[in-house]
Image (tube, rainbow, N blue to C red; front, side, top):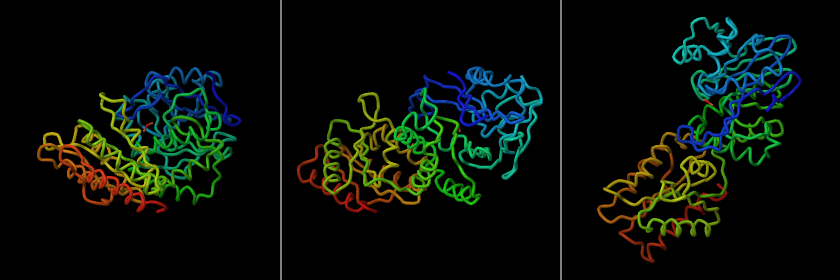
Length: 404
Ligand code: FEO
């Protein structure tokens, strides 16, 4: 595949990783490592690729310019999916200035042998003129690493925010309108749910800061997935909405089961949710026995919901391992950092002592989810009155969050 022109003198020169299916616990249909070449009188390369993909990137660069003639490297982020090509480039172009944050220098020194690397530490507002193209740098610490920064190309009004606004997808399409806006937004939602939720307050602060600069943003060119050219404003607004916890009238029920009792309870709760006027999404966690839903897809549903209800049987006085692992993931994401909190409760069956529902409830509190009611726990099999309790609980929580 050739380099793709975004605007005159601005090119996507990244790499496509068609085969990646799991990225530290996030399932994905491949991804892209987006690098961009900006050519004025001088030339800058913005970001590189995961180690092993740098030749794919350099082949695309060669269509535009001899890579040894690159004048500047802009390193928006240390993580190796964007900096893996730096060692080769720094060796190929000795002394090439590498523009990055102070924290990035410390990060690169921990990742690579940086002897001879020519770092230039940027501060927010600093500019770099390429002659006809001006790059403006904005530090973005903890969006999502301490070293992160955004680069803005003033003449073409293109924002290069690295991971922010990205999507994990491998495709032949380079732009949102080519892939389809709905598909691009769905991938961006999953990316936000799995990586950005805990940073929501920082996202809102940064959006306010960038909004205050009064700059136009015609395109958002992230470091993964398609480039937002048709819906640049839409994805920025979506980040504000998702950070604020704005979601559908929807309730996600996530659970696992041993012999089907917790399944019956989940189904009754879902019926109540629908009766209460909300969309219900029921997710049996995937654990190898069932073709269930992977946790990285479940959190996407939760981000899009106003309530989350979690079910587990009790096994050896603990939740099932699938649910325990999921709760660890959810605590880390901490949806309580979204402006508008989610509500929820727990349910499940037991044979022995029971009590797993209380442990899961504790985890829900730690994740910042507001507890709507007492856990519903049944002995062995739920009988008809208990099924009715489940149905009614689903109805009440749906009525409570609807139109919130
Ligand atoms: Fe934080 Fe895509 O790396």
